[in-house]
Image 1 (cartoon, rainbow, N blue to C red):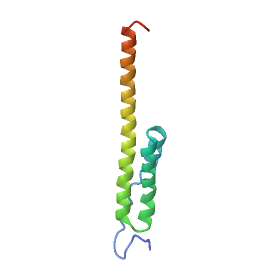
Image 2 (image 1 turned 45 degrees about the vertical axis):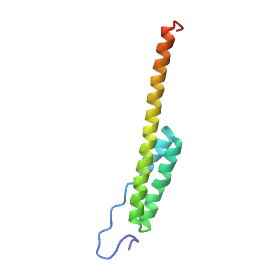
Image 3 (image 1 turned 180 degrees about the vertical axis):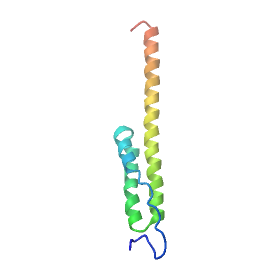
Length: 98
């Protein structure tokens, strides 16, 4: 019998671990927040397998949060970068330097 099963009960569904998403946001978006997502994503399966469903659920929520934070921080960075480049281009053009 599995550690998270008790006799006569249906086992709870394993929470999403967010590992793939965390790895992708670490590579392409924001390294520190992505690493926090990977750490929590790794904890989901181990906690679920040891029978700690509530801990696995908390780790899944934390992994989701850090993955989304990493993604939105990167999006915000790139939006600001594009805005600043447009402003710089317009100012240089208006000064006649381009």
